[in-house]
Length: 132
Image (cartoon, rainbow, N blue to C red):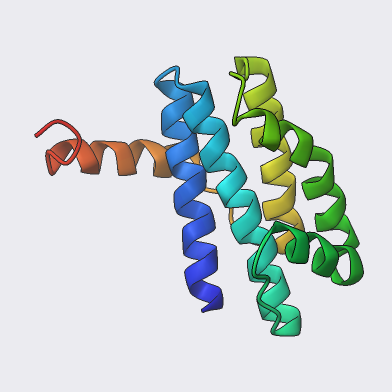
């Protein structure tokens, strides 16, 4: 399972980066937040074999077991909740992306490079999975 969470975190980050480039800030933010939560869950599982069932449990487990990741996640949660009702501007999305990159670094998970994002996007286009 832990490798699956790392893969999910990286894939969500890639999707967020693509959405950001397509001027889709809400979709970018949503995927960056999914990446953040997958990073936290990966750390909790890898180090402590813990699997949170929801955000409340995730926050409690991170607070007790990974204070740095808790701090990153906690600082961003208000913004995450705002995405349900409001659009974020590009500057806010870039801040979310930056904090998610900090979480990747903290968890020692490789942040997808611009080349990886471009490659994934081109692969989707080549397979015609985006536009029939």
